[in-house]
Image 1: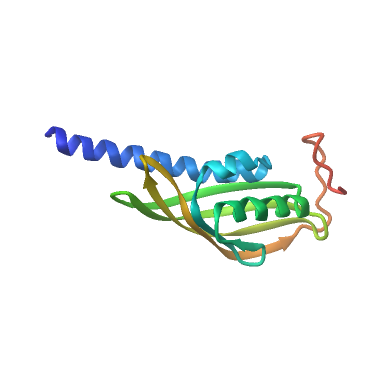
Image 2 (image 1 turned 45 degrees about the vertical axis):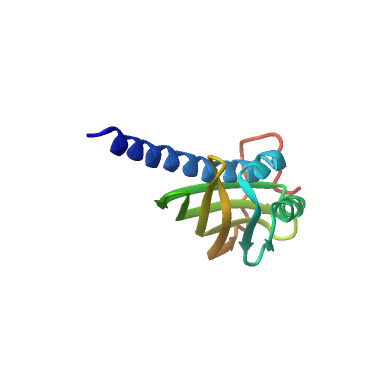
Length: 158
């Protein structure tokens, strides 16, 4: 194998790892209510479309939308699975399944599942989201759901 082919393979592997890290960082930012982490994963001109939950057309709008979501749903956990990522040069597209548990201030505990449709770009040697849209498969209220153990910061009645 020549050096050029090896460098291309290494770039694809490093790019995939960087993109999978963005997907994980998104989940972590939301369930840790971490605006700083959320800001780091988007290019300035990015869009986030969460039908039924909100839409934003810039990184600052994404942060504002997240902060509003956190007031409405102060406890949330995202599990991302089965990422399919296609990388071509400095751009990539992908899908990732999501299963989320939220505590909504009005509805109480709810489970949300669906599929994220993503676009990523590498600019100045750094991969970030440029577009993310959620395809809702279902939102299910979890009536009578009460945790019996866990974080002292989570209360089903909050």
